[in-house]
Length: 287
Image (cartoon, rainbow, N blue to C red; front, side, top):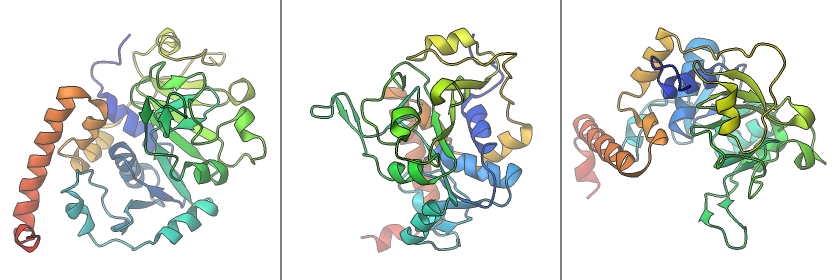
């Protein structure tokens, strides 16, 4: 069954992500979904969070997902400045959280954002491991989301281990950094199955276990008893998400091909117009 028609998949995912965040930690918002989840959590579920928009903007500014030009719209806000040293200090002292969107995640929670295919001759070269090795060895909670739950993304074994999961990858590491939660367009999952494998925590309204198994590259552990339905976003959740992202930058992460290109151009032009109206001298100063 498809997701219940009255729900938008982007909003149910963001709300589910937001509800995982808690405590006095610094939350980094690298993607539109991560930014909106952090913003929503701060507003509704975890007021003690410190939200990092960009290193330039610092903490506790409205994330406002944007394309390149729109970065000005965020950076002019008055935030608490941070250095990269501050951010790494937060990681190494377990005061940092981030939602990571891997290209692949496997049954043990190993993640890949480095390369698809054989390492020596990859089909696709990706961004590289970046900060995931530190996150998956120092943080007590590691969060992942995937917007298209499919056998190509949720795989039996990742092509390259950018971040350590459970099982063999956890040998020599403490439990800190072990995978905590995966949110997808089908449900919310954790890694409480046998030997630290992926298990169903809740399914989004309208989604079935059979659909999850059919769109996963390995058998997902199904806990005994009735499987809960993911709590849908409340009207307040939806209002906060839409107010923070009026141009719907978040929806670009759900699109591909010509549809994504058309959406990108539309958002880019609307941002350019907003930037020009707000800062009419920027174009002249940049010449």
